[in-house]
Length: 310
Image 1 (tube, rainbow, N blue to C red):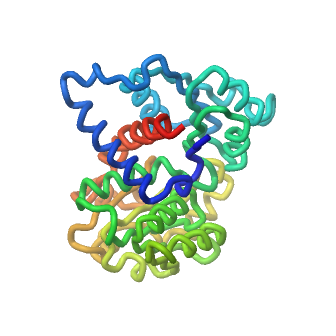
Image 2 (tube, rainbow, N blue to C red):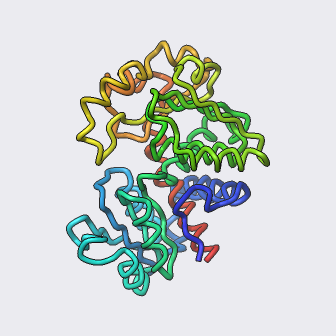
């Protein structure tokens, strides 16, 4: 059974296939006869949420509808995964009735356990280790902007030990890009992710830069990425984090370090005046809204690809 729990669950060649499907489906939805092509007719997605979401819920539910299928929302109080019932048991029971499962969890081990019990593909909609669906949307946006997926420098400014950072690093490693991270002391990337990046880089020739210097990371970048300094579940550390990350805001001075045609990305929700200034996120280099929309198209491509390969 092929699941999509981590971005490295697919190869470089398979990434290209997913992006090709995403582009095709995005183009087709604008055609008047798109409703005649329904690959997921009578198919059902169970969408399990330990964490609430705007973009994840809308993109998966609309995506299933556009493909001819149906999505069932299962919120935190509906099943109490891991408390009332084990994730493994939920995987066994749920997969006996649906065609695909998406789970947005706190711990990565939860989505792994869910997949272990499942007889249908499981998609990681977000965990504390990775956010692979988000970076599919990021790179679909990058491809639309630059007409390529490789030969790029992608810079992340903020918390290096972050699920978006980890998935961005690994997809950049698969594609052979330069991934640069600027983060404060004590907030560097998970060593496991770094080791995986270096292993992939032996084949792809990707490059990784970890630094506390924002200027070094942002210099000559094609893409600058930021994320909230206080992720869901880390609210107790809010005041501490706001002080530590104060000098890691992406503002116009940071964007000027990048290439002239560089773009800014953010997975949202964003906090203007914190991790990014309003002049950047609402400025001409920002692509946050096309990026958000591309969650729909990238995930449709992913779901169709998983259905074909299982």
